[in-house]
Length: 107
Image (cartoon, rainbow, N blue to C red; front, side, top):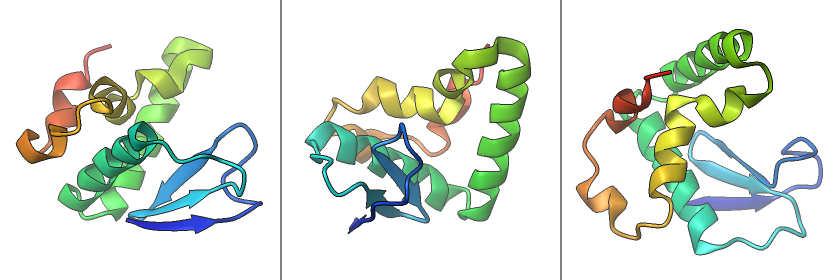
């Protein structure tokens, strides 16, 4: 995974953002194994969706969840739930099934 340090991206309040499989991190952020695994799960999601549809789905789901749940939209996203649930498992990506995030679509 390509890791880039940047003081402008990601937006304030976020320590890292994964853009097309490249991890962009604020200069002072310490990259833990957990954070890297979390972002690698997102990269697997992007790859299986051929990247651009990932961002479309993520944005649409975020808008729907925002309308339904207000401030908790980010943590209710299916792709974030998969990543958070499995970020502590070092072997997760070895046994992860394609489109595993679909089972996190429930409200």
